[in-house]
Length: 108
Image 1 (cartoon, helix red, strand yellow):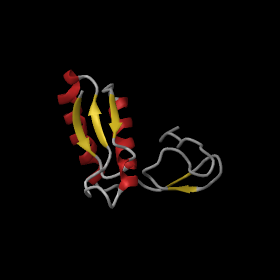
Image 2 (cartoon, rainbow, N blue to C red; image 1 turned 90 degrees about the vertical axis):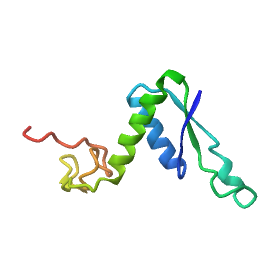
Image 3 (cartoon, one colour; image 1 turned 45 degrees about the vertical axis):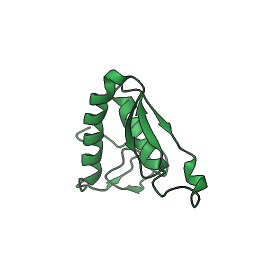
Image 4 (cartoon, rainbow, N blue to C red; image 1 turned 120 degrees about the horizontal axis):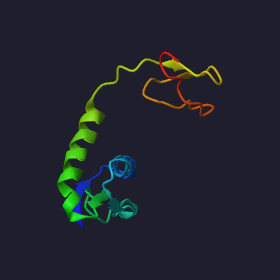
């Protein structure tokens, strides 16, 4: 098992873990609950992602780079209206936050 990345917080760690999982790189989050000891530990105690199979470390690093580049890229996605409930949904989302309806495909 190899250390891949120390996340800022639990949310970033989980998003990256899910991203790696979608690309078939098995990873785990360690140190998830250390932030509860803040004050008695150094400030850099965010959760850490570890690649389970050492052979997948390089692939994990490539995916980490893509994940971070995507996070920095400004969004151009237009707001869309849900066909299920009519709610206005931010373009970065594929599911309606109000009713869970998937965004209608363009041209359908």
